[in-house]
Image (cartoon, rainbow, N blue to C red):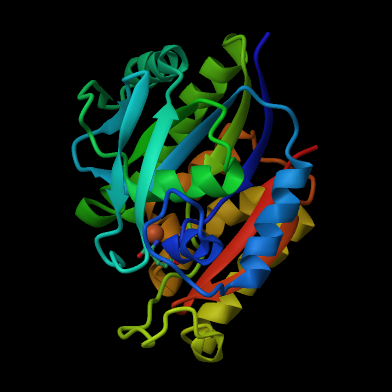
Amino acid sequence: MGSIVGGVIAPHPPHLVYAENPPQNEAHSEGGWEVLRWGYERLRADLPDFDVMVLLSPHWQTYVGTHFLGVPHFKNKSVDPIFPNLFRYNYELDVDVGLAEAIEAKARKAGLVTRMMRNPDFRVDYGTIVSAHLLNPAWDKPIVGLSSQRSTHFYSVEVMQEQALALAAATRKACLESDQRCLLVASNSLSHRHFTTEAALPEDMSREHVTSHAMYLWDMKMIGLLKGGHSREMVDVMPEFINQAISEADGGALSWLIAALDYPSEPAEVYAYGNVIGTGNAVAGWLS
Ligand code: 2XP
Ligand code: FE2
């Protein structure tokens, strides 16, 4: 019998990997963004046993339908297109292709446009790599990678929501029918207004803060809902949140996560909130 052992919000600023200096990353740092990194440390310690991480990343942007990683093993270099100075990461990862195919089949049956990604030379996007690294630096568990169907931008935020919820229902069914313990992962920031320039030393923490008070208020609104166990209200306010806070939830990951967890009414544990080049990031999870 399969299960969903929990769900996490796992933002993917490449800065957090850069700050940790793992052997896979070519760039070298003097640290930085400790509050978020220590939050990830405590989240990792709280993770229940799981067999597979099912992860939706807003940086795998597929304008025609939702795509699913469909090759058992990937090995390549991931370079952040905006921050190549920080993130040039040599990765090697395994995919649970069987579970990916099961979710894809259910999503297709529900009327979504879908596609299995079968190119062995495909470069997995850096959102997937960063969140997967921060949750499991040993890379000893397979992932299922779901793309972000960019309907917020080419259509409307309401269409994005509808599709994210349909994808969530397919994900939930396939996970429960599998024989795997699944951890669901939404890879995204909350507010997402970046600074337009970078400090000479990116990890100079005297320069880091939220871009604006309006962004901060939206982040605290969403964190209040997380802590209060009001996940359905989070989905309800998602359109305004996305429009007003330029949120990276525009990619659908957060709506998908909450719906795939069947709208938890228990409080989420918020492990950290912090800003990265001005964006608002919460490390949080429903893990019990
Ligand atoms: O630009 C993005 O979407 C990123 N993920 C990189 C930087 C900071 C995010 O919080
Ligand atoms: Fe991002």
